Length: 87
Image 1 (cartoon, rainbow, N blue to C red):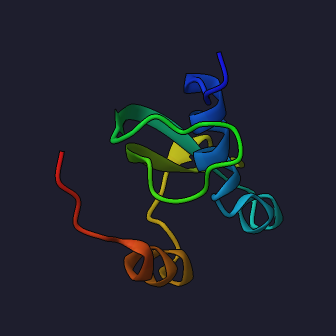
Image 2 (cartoon, rainbow, N blue to C red):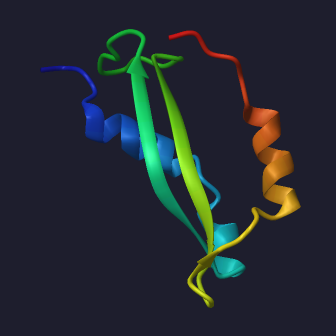
């Protein structure tokens, strides 16, 4: 249909995570809730802010299989990316 679908949006948001850091430190993330708000249809070739994705997740220690605090380096990096949004 010439526009990006849900799978495309979720994939792009997933690519923005810090997977290499998590693997290196034997950490994982468990998605608890994910809300995607589509602001405008994204057509083939478009760039720009077209959707907002709000994640609720839990940081996991993969060795103990229990939740754990996010490392300070990830919290600091994440805080720099937080932007207010209006649904």
